[in-house]
Every structure is written in structure tokens, then in C-alpha cells.
Length: 213
Image (cartoon, rainbow, N blue to C red; front, side, top):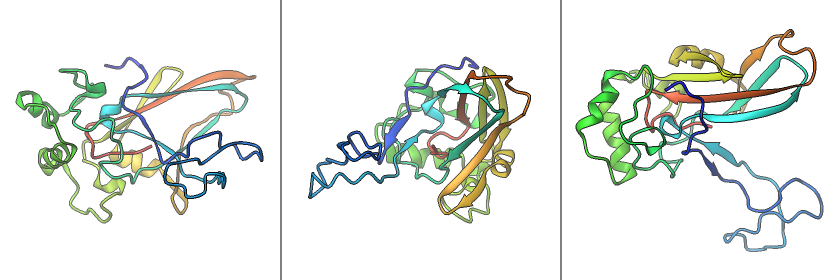
């Protein structure tokens, strides 16, 4: 389906609890594993993690004044990083749903029973995608390790653009260690004044093997 509806499978990972906004009086980091609850350390690397089964992530950008939209990415997350979608075999865990443009190797799943364990799911996906994976595999968590049929959809105010794996890889830029960004929009004429903009993106044809945020 091309309907842009917020997905149910996105998960906040590694974010410290509390109000971690950097202010002196804010209460942050009172986690069960913290030996000193009053430390209140605000630094963290919280991410919003998803995969194909997570569906769309939809963001509203208020009062945009420039036609430049850049997102920060995290493309090297492990297959088990998102625990919400463990055992899911369809988008949002909705029975029988198949994504637009899904390849035959995804539809081979229709006669298989749903997996109960995440590890079994991932191993089965690796077998299913076997002939679709790139042989280079230089980095087990790199974009090169995504299935060849991988597609990345992004939408700006409802207009969807689709990138294949190679196009997606070329658009993602490494700015520094663990800092990847991709420009979704660079159009000085996009807005003439403060305008609310909706952006969304999702991944397809990759199951749990394209965990990213």
C-alpha cells in the first residue's frame, strides 16, 4: 500500500529516561543500571530504530523557512536491535499484507508459519534472501549487506520517491564517525514563507536485515 500511515514497529533504543534537555535542574538518567541516581548525566545516543516491518515513520516539521531537509541516519544497526518486530513477517504485523513492488522471494513466505523466535526469523530471512545478497559483504552491518532488492521510500508532503539499494548507498554521506546523513530536499523555491512540512520514510524488500534509524 502507498498510504502514508505511521507504522507500529518503530522503537526508541538507548535513550536515557527522564527530561534530558541539558538544563541544570532537569532530572535525567535515573536508570536501574545507574549506580548514582543523582548523577543526572545527560549525554546519550538514543535512536528510533526500525526495519521493513516497522512501516512508515512520519515526521511533521513546523514552520520550515528554507527548502533544505537533511536527515541523520544510522544504517549499521544489527538485525535484533529492534525488539518490537521480533517474529513479525508482515508490515505492522498485519496478516497477509505485502508491500508494493515486493519481489517473489518475499511472497515465498506465504505458506510458512509465523516464526516465534527472532533468531529463527532472521536466519530464515538470510536463507530466503540468499541469492539476493551482494557477495562483497565487506562490513556485516553496511548498506552493502542489504539485499540487492532493497528499496527506500521517502515522501515529502505525500509525494513518494523510491531509491534502490545503490541509489540509497550513493545518497548517504559519511560526515564523521557514526554520523551519516542524507539530503531529502534541496530546493530554494520549495517554500516562500514559514510552512509546515510532512516527511516520511520506510524500507522495503529486506525484512529484519535492514535495521536502521
